[in-house]
Length: 160
Image (tube, one colour):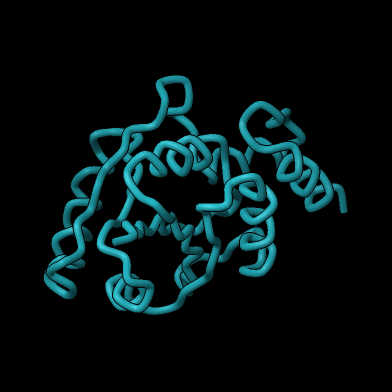
């Protein structure tokens, strides 16, 4: 039986922290679906298609990673994909309260779905997409925080 995991998020943009979680998740699953969420409560910098394409480029060397977008309940998407594992990254203890509530709700909606929390590498613990966006917007150097294609895309986005 193939173990399928889902790593959901907005990935606006994908960071080295996300990359760390994705690559480490592959130790837990045979296939990982990186699921880009449509979130109407947020005004993303990148369109849904841009985020999906950036992720596909970042993980083009990993055949076990698939990138898809989804709209609606994560539990429904996981069921459709045949996934039984949700991967979530915890940067700080404050993330745990929200994430545990989401995990419990997902289990209520899809009892076979387990959530696994991964802590990022120590040197990436502070990193967030919003922090990367802000630094890039102010012409700061984010080249060590994101994949080169993401760095270039951020430069293009903020140059005009």
